[in-house]
Amino acid sequence: MHDLIRDMALRITSKSPLFMVKAGLRLLKFPGEQEWEENLERVSLMENGIEEIPSNMSPHCQILSTLLLQRNVHLQRIPECFFVHMHGLKVLNLCHTSIEVLPNSVSDLTNLRSLLLQDCLSLTRVPSMAKLLALQYLDLQRTQIEEVPEGMEMLENLSHLYLYSWRMKKFPTGILPRLRNLYKLKLSFGNEALRETVEEAASLSDRLDTFKFHFSKLNDFNIYVKSTDGRGSKNYCLLLSAYWIGGFLIADLEVDKSVFLIDCKICEREEHIVLPEDVQFLQMFAVSDVARLSDVLPREQGLVNIGKFSHDLKALRFDNCGNLKNLFSLRLLPALQNLEFLVVHYCYSIEEIVAVEDEETEKELPTNTIINTVTLPRLKKLHLEDLPEFKSFCSNNGVLVCNSLQEIVVCGCSNLKRLSLSLPLLDNGQPSLPSALEVIETEKEFWESLEWDQPNAKDVLNPYCKFVGF
Image 1 (cartoon, rainbow, N blue to C red):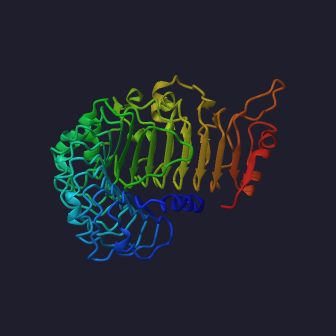
Image 2 (image 1 turned 30 degrees about the horizontal axis):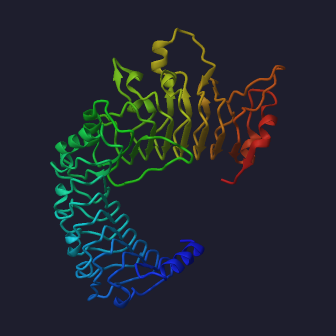
Image 3 (image 1 turned 180 degrees about the vertical axis):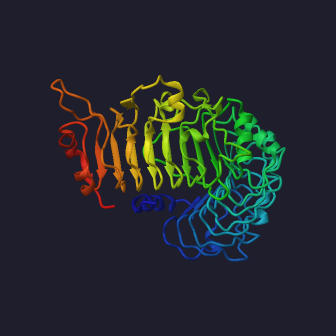
């Protein structure tokens, strides 16, 4: 909290016993029981260094409605008796603390509306919630709990449920259909997920505003995508990973529908991944069984069915995909006309972005057809970093036409000899700067060694170079 704001809050609240505000004061000791007056309504002790609450403390604060203890990162234990006389409590925030167990007395806080436990990284147990019928907001993200809290099926007023934890074993069937007021849902299905639970989640997707699902197994991911049958919320994020529960975002990227595939097998002989048809951001991290984007797309009669692939795709990101050879073929280009962001990092086998000559293209194009340009009209950011085998943007000496480019990053691409980007031409035939371009980030030695297709292209682009070490 900013010092000026804190001081102002302290001056205001010191005139009334209804509030206790001691946020961000670096307190090490919990306020004594004499400070917990009966008419307290709100208490903020967040962002301090409090390590413990006295074992016999049980403040008589029947009208206390809000208790903020978040970001006391060393707080490990709360006494069982602490909440016994706080039956009016509506908001309890313990995020970013080190508590291991939530006291059983929380089970009797029947007026509680928000229970916030995000990033309590040591929390292993939450007591029964069967009596918390007023609860609307429950956040258990990134905790250590392995099982769904007892009585969760009774929380029919829940609008926000965040139960997103890699330790979760399974989410039982029969609970989600009872949570009729859910608006936002984040859920880990766990290693022992039941097909019925995944299908129940899919049935909710058309009425949820936002959902984020973590699947540990490819089969569960596919069951979900197939069960939605084209339905979906306005905003979703699907993550497939046995261990990770997060992805890598792209700055300034605004998308509503994302898929993260992290350290997993998605092109097994027994089962092949099924992607949502409206995905806008697709990221693969440490996916070793993919050589090109088309490997993850549905096929008919041996050819990629681009009709089943999202034409809304705005961003592609590949990190540490060791067997990636190229990104896509000409056949996929019609589905990539809305692509705005293309990021490729640490893919040590990739040689090119667009494979102009490939089996699928050869089947469809007339013999001896020559493709000179590949157009991505809306591409704004192109990041290529640490790609030692990368040789060209397009095979067969093709060039990329990307007149909306704002940012180009090319670093650690020692085998790239030619920056095959087509620049707009002036009336006199000389290259001109793309109107949107803001910066080119690269290494000076690499930039000086490049060859150019268009005379004077280097001179036109030089003012926008930002040289970096790599």
